[in-house]
Image (cartoon, rainbow, N blue to C red; front, side, top):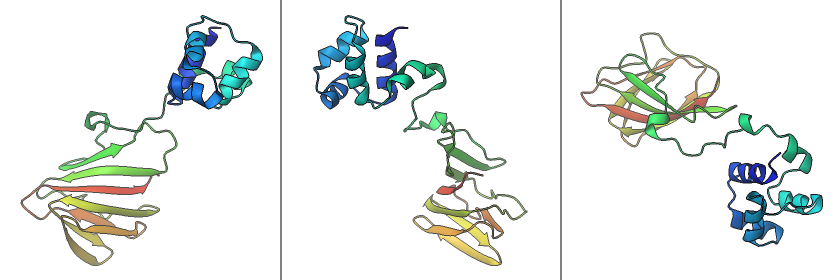
Length: 180
């Protein structure tokens, strides 16, 4: 097993620089560099000390399946957001690759005349958002609301609801609801 390469991979997965790891455990960053390049073979106690700065146990260090681990994404480029909408409604899902996410964060785009459909939507949880461009008609239950740029909404999404763009301009919304 390549201890140096393994240390480097785990350190990077945890988002640590060599300098930061060295500072955490009280060694020079050249020591970390030498271990990662297999220039030195650390003793078990030295390796334990280095791993305490990550932190990871020595057992996990040697048994962790690195191929199954991906660093958790923090930033999502526009091209990385799948469009889960239909018709003239674009619903770009932010953070789609995050395993076990508890919410759906969406960048919504409604072309003029676009709507979520003739049927009212209902799903568990709560839903909220902010209109960042244009106007939207929001129906919740029997109430109809007209929201403009800067207006927000928040409601229990067990209640029947739908969105319609009744203007001549594109409407964009940033919204969040539970990942079901």
